[in-house]
Image 1 (cartoon, rainbow, N blue to C red):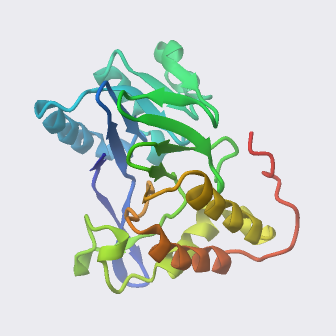
Image 2: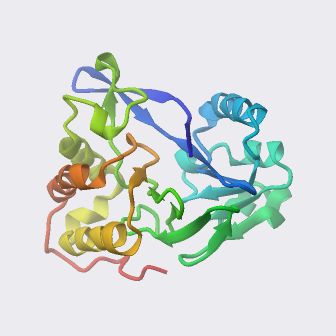
Length: 255
């Protein structure tokens, strides 16, 4: 799996923060799947990175998987469809035919349980336990046991102390719980009006019991290579960003 893209600069609390809108190339013996469409401004960088991989013999993607159709996740999808004329865009793509009518037949909506065969691995569409849009989908690579979790596990990092390009367990001085709480209040505002504990329990059930996840690849945060070590901080952030026990969640139906 290849982690692609570049940092975006943010300013918060008088300090420069960086944020990702990551794209991932998941390879197999037969083909590859490109996960997420990237920010529009990042497309030239991502294409350059991809061309370098293809020159090394990495198979070009036949599938372009989107967790959902917000700009940071789908901004480059038109360019990628143009670059990979034999590929289909899949996952949560249900409204993209309105933006790209010329590619309407190349959008394939996928639901939890659907599978893409990569050859020596399978890419599974799985339930998105935390969704900022109603039909968000997550993905899972069965051989490397990587969960692609879209907006969940999202947080910024500090450029000035060398966090860029690191995984979550390699950085010091990053208050993951505080960052997750901040992002939860922005992208998962509904968590302020529900009891978040059942969602945390379901998240752990999916990661540990059902999938046996070894790596978590969020679109907006540093990759997590030791979920058991990092998940407690994530959970503290989820709790801090919510107001528990108020009303039933309108997104209880996972369809």
